[in-house]
Length: 193
Image (tube, rainbow, N blue to C red; front, side, top):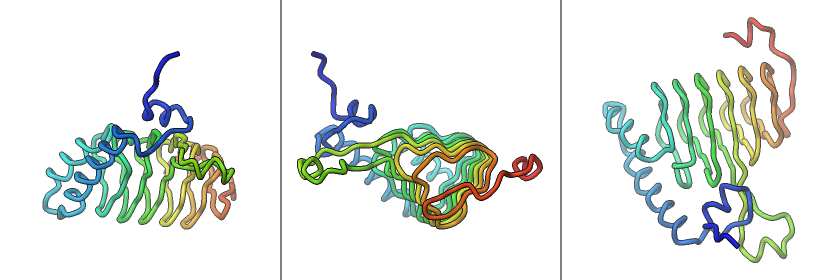
């Protein structure tokens, strides 16, 4: 039987132990980098970019995160070109988070790959779960939205502020609410803008 690390289990969407030494070391590294990142000013953009490239799995050209920003590991976050995240965004990246080009996140958007077993007896044993999140290209996510584990948001979609997204949202729509649901299809002209 092949031995797999807790990180490999975590990224496979299987039960894993978050207190594993490798994961704890990765988290401590991220916390150290985040602390420095969050203390940078608007005049220290080159330093901020260097820190983001060290912290995250990938950072595209023109990607910009307005501090403060928080994440678990950083290395599982992949940003395409021209991403904008406003103040106070949180990404619990216990699994991969891919964000497509030209996507914008309002203030206090929360992206959670992390979850726990539903049955209390299993949850009390301590293992956790995480499922990947994919956000397409040209997406706008309004402030205060919460994106749950395993969700995919299609290209050119707009998510209303304060929405709680627990299921996939297709491309080219306006969706909002708790739980988030499609309000209407966007016209080709609206989706293009």
